[in-house]
Amino acid sequence: MNENLKKLNIETPVYLCDLSKVRSNLNLLKSVAKKSGAKILCALKGFAFSGAMPLVSSELSGATCSGLHEALYASECGFKQIHVYSPAFKESEMEEILKVAHHVVFNSVSQLLLFKERALKAGVSVGLRVNPESSASPVEAYDPCGRFSRLGVRESALKEALGEFPNLLKGVEGLHFHALCEEDAESLERVLEAFEARFGEFFGGLKWLNFGGGHHITRAGYNVKLLVKLVKDWREKYGVEVFLEPGEAVGWQTGDLVARVLDIVKNERQICIIDASPECHMPDTVLMPYRPRIKGEVAMMDFERAKFCYLFGGATCLAGDVCGVAAGFEEYFFEREICVGDLVVFEDQIHYSVVKNTTFNGVALPHLAVLDEDGTLRYIKKFGYEEFRRRN
Ligand SMILES: *Cc1c(COP(=O)(O)O)cnc(C)c1O
Image 1: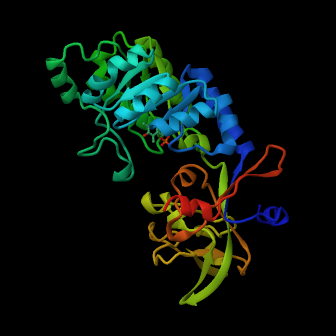
Image 2: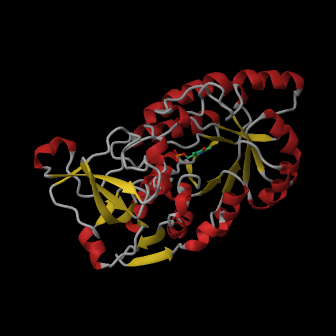
Image 3: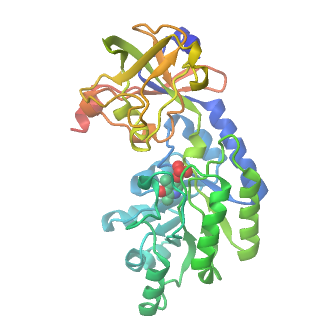
């Protein structure tokens, strides 16, 4: 890959998405949809890479959006069905949302009371997000069912509200939960048990259930068979449509962040300063935290082969802006020496990294490019000073 990129004379930093890999993720998701009858939506929160959207919108059933901006984007990208959920909708944005949305999911009893009639009048299918109080998230920041979570209505709160507003669920066509993060179908099975135990009494008369995101369907080894079985069973048992809304699984391992070594300094270790920044361009490696893989690095078990050791830091003034620091392991090992001007390819940086990046410290945003299915390199967007200027 590095040799190829060198030949292509690639401009760095750049997020480079391989459309043939997006295609193969979509093929897997489509086969899940076909076998199970699930409707699969792309969660734009996790994957909204413009260069891949024509493909994604044509192959999946729709998009799930976290508010007005993602909804407008979904509409612009031609998604067939647009679902919108937000922890709290703004009065001033509701009208525009209802113009493009097919489904709207409210997060609380109060928001449902505030907007339900308006949504129904607009002909939009109304849902309520509930908190199944069961999840297996690896990190607290990614656990929507944790203590004090603001995401979704708890069983106790819903029952209490129904005492006061007996017609609360009248007109509501679906229930939604989102409780998973990078998880297998076994975790979904456990959450579904909790969801059914707490909210099963409300399923009668519903048109749809939304099992949220966090299904790591495209990861090697994911139990696709179990997922298909669960969706089928639930569709048959309750006579509902089932929606899945993965983000990460759509963009999983579909591309890289390509950077270049600007300088190499020494302080006990050799430290490469690169034109990408973990803090700005790979923020999930800091929050999750995890250590991004670099193409060509020697795997941990082959330590003996490693002749060279490097750290990789951004060209920012943040001391901790070093790859792998948050995960507690910042040394990378290589068989070959790295030199100034070399390309460094951080693997799997297309989902979440792109939607979350920043211009902190005035660093340039990585360009966006795709490798088309025939292997040609195509720049989608190039960013410069203007991005920083506009945001400050
Ligand atoms: C984040 C999110 C998703 C997508 O989650 P992934 O882990 O990227 O699959 C789907 N639905 C909701 C409500 C979310 O908040």
